[in-house]
Image (cartoon, rainbow, N blue to C red; front, side, top):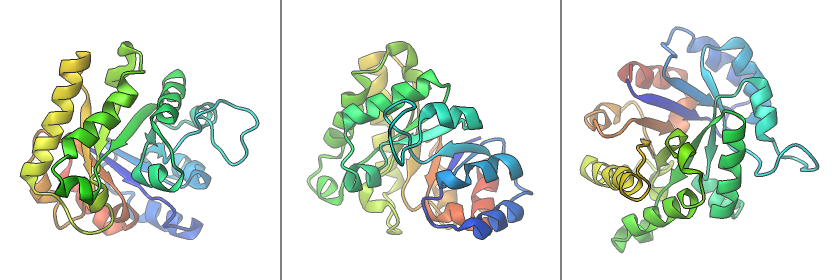
Length: 238
C-alpha cells in the first residue's frame, strides 16, 4: 500500500469541493491524505473519510501573524499532515531552510506529520547536479532537527520542472534519486524515512510509477482535484 497525498492548491471553490467529496466517497481512504485550501479543511474533516493535511503551516505559534495558520490551530481541527517546503512556497514566498526547520518543529510539537518537499529545477537536471541540490535541501533542514524526530518526516521528491508540466522523469531517474535520499538520511543521520514522488502524477502514468517499490507513495497536484482520476489513482495504491 502506497500513501496518496492530494495537494489541491487553490483549484477548487466550495461547491466543487463538496462535489469532489461526494464523488469520491466510495474510495478506500485508509492511505489517502487530502490537503485542501485551509478554508475548506473543516469541510473535509466533517464530510469526508480522508485523512486531512494542510498545504502549509506558519513558522510561528499562535499570535499576531495575520493571514497565517498555526500548527496549534491545525491540531485543534484534527489535521494529521502538513506540506512544508513546496517549490511554489520556495519560489513565490521566498521561503528557506531556516523557516522550514521552524515549521517542522512546530508540527512535531502538535503531533502533525510533516511532508517535506525537495527537488531540482530543469537547469540543475541539465547540469547533472540534481543530487547536489536535493542533498543540500535535505541537510540544511535535517542538520537542525532533533534526531529523535527525524523518522516522523516524510520526504517528497518533486522535480520542479515536472510539476504541472506533464513531464515525468524516467523510472530509473526517480529510483536513483529516491535511493539517494534514503541512503543519505540513513548514512548521515542513522534514520529511515519514507519518500514520496510528486510531479505530474496522473492516471496515465501511475501504473508505470507503481513499478518502483522504493517509492512509498505520491504527492499529487492537479489530478487530486478530478474525482474520477483521483479515485483511479487511489485504487492503484491500495
